[in-house]
Length: 95
Image 1 (cartoon, rainbow, N blue to C red):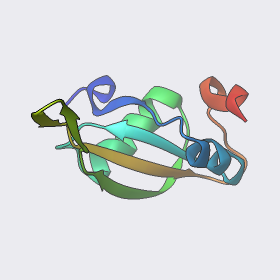
Image 2 (cartoon, one colour):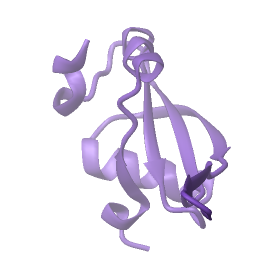
Image 3 (cartoon, helix red, strand yellow):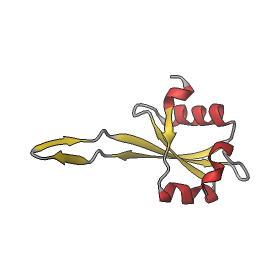
Image 4 (cartoon, helix red, strand yellow):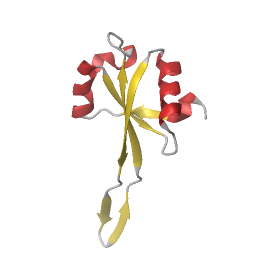
């Protein structure tokens, strides 16, 4: 799988932005990607060293429009811990 296909987009919630100070970055990743693929993708795309990866499955919420009900798609989130002193420059202005 191409590294740019593994990382879909950064997670920009309030909690995810507060983790940047601790050297942790949150990304939404491809649902079938494993830890090794995520680590390789982050290291190639952003040129940093990854120490640890935590994965979370984000369940899709049920939404209603009148009498019709549907669900948002399920997603996978990866919280990536970088080596001490390293930063991702593209996401640095968020804090």
